[in-house]
Image (cartoon, rainbow, N blue to C red; front, side):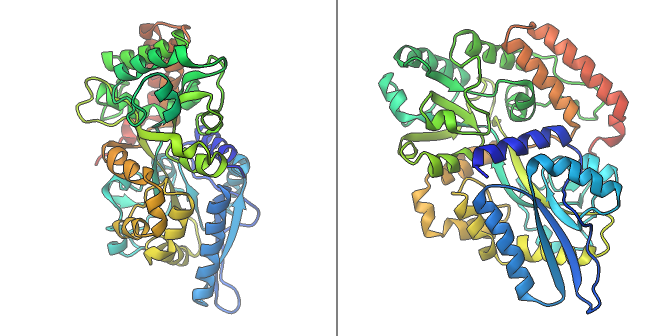
Length: 447
């Protein structure tokens, strides 16, 4: 599947099913065969071709490495993932182990995920780097083992288009004020059909892609610490919304999106000087728009003037989880431990073949990936690792509907459908409904 389409389907599926434990295909969890071999069902989504090849390869290598466990690998189209898993769970036939990208909070509270502390050696859990720990554990207990982290809000720029406007092509904007000034300089130099920037532009995309920006501007996200009330009625949220309204009102962005946020076609076809997307977009530019790659700049997304060291992105991820009802939980954990927590060299091809756009979650794997000779041709890797990841925050653990309320507010202000005050009030009402409906205070993280 093409990178752009794959990411779009993943984003839509994540938006529709956040907080749910998902996977899918026919057949259910594994069992023991007559010869004593434990059969494990492993389901993962359809990713990019190189990622799919890695998944198939890692299963094959594991099966050939021993004779006590047989892993059956099933690849599921992302747009079929939700329904397949719901059906499997309803029938009691969920897979033993599967990929997972949503918050684990709802899934753990629903009893869908198996605790890993008694299944995976503690020294292997201890290897998970600090930024990946919040997405993998709840109240000090691990329920997921991450494969990767990837910043979800990164700024890309076309060096030629910046040069044509008399701007330094090697340096992107570090603040929103600089971004707006640069757009003012770039706009007169563009041809018809070209725009300064392609950012998020709809409620669903804002909901997940702007969480880091919310933190950047306000110093917090959409709920208070004990999840008893919304926390969006402040000047930080208002200013963030107003900034997007400026992009819209000044014509710096297209009023009909040129491409999806997760894709790079608009940037690859040089329709925009700046593109906002996740770090994964660089792999699409490298594979599909090789002539644009040398003139592509990459950097952290611009900050609020008052950010005080806070970054403007969350760290997306994919983790592996074990179903709480698996009949062979230990065998599934043995496979997980071997593949994700074992020999770093098993993981190097994944990060190399995805063109160094993702971050390993173990230092030993980071070192092995950096030592690969291909890393010298991917200077963006060090920018992602050193300039973007250290100040990024984990994805929120509160329900998706909370994020969607904020995303809806941001879109309505940007497009002039509501004032910031009115949009915030509407979002607060929606969030309060979720708080009461889902009894969020009882589910708030305690650590």
